[in-house]
Image 1 (tube, one colour):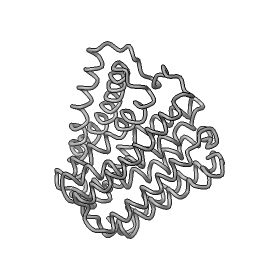
Image 2 (image 1 turned 60 degrees about the vertical axis):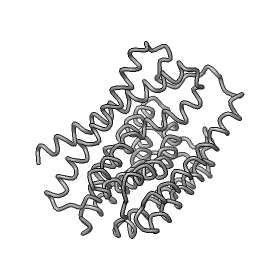
Image 3 (image 1 turned 90 degrees about the vertical axis):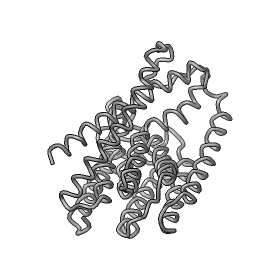
Length: 318
């Protein structure tokens, strides 16, 4: 048991560190090649920050634990809204009127509803996976086209935050290499440790994926959001969460579904998918009403997540 928890801890550290290195190296390389920072932010950074979830889900399918893959994505989306937004809001109110995220929110809701429908169609196999990836391609094309349309209003030489475009070639290649090696290794350790603990304690793979694995792979987003809140920029977390949730549902499950079938557990159909949908809907009044997510709301979000975890662990669903 101690060894299994050790594997999880090492896996989480590798995922966080490797994901950060991959993003820094890939962004620096993209800027060096002359790709606009705006496009880099929409593609490379978005992919890099969700790389832990992607690698964990693929590793889970290959290790014949598809419930961890599904639990990871559904649980991550719930945690993104209730925790990744909730905790920073406790530190500093999240303004929803400084950036227009209404269209992105509508896309997120569309992706969420589409994913729920796909889940009820039975095991997610390669045809459903291609449908999810096709929906992602449409959204990415729309967002990139929108970004290029409004590029004239932005500084063309703007750099992605915390990225050095003049990073030496050897260092950025080292970052990319370390990220590409560390991510699958960390994912494998995390899945192995989580699966072993689940079987030892009699807890289902689904619950482990929804809780331990999901929260663990959301650590990069959580750390970034808390740091932004401490700097008085908690509003930046909103766009990251909305984009991450879209990517999680359409890309991660889409890619994982190409590596093997993903049977959707009954308990997820009856409970967790609806919690994810309800958590997503919670953002609507704040985004469309331009109401800030203040400390009280942040505390409520966090307590709601704690209640959800308690329901999972002590609600007779282990």
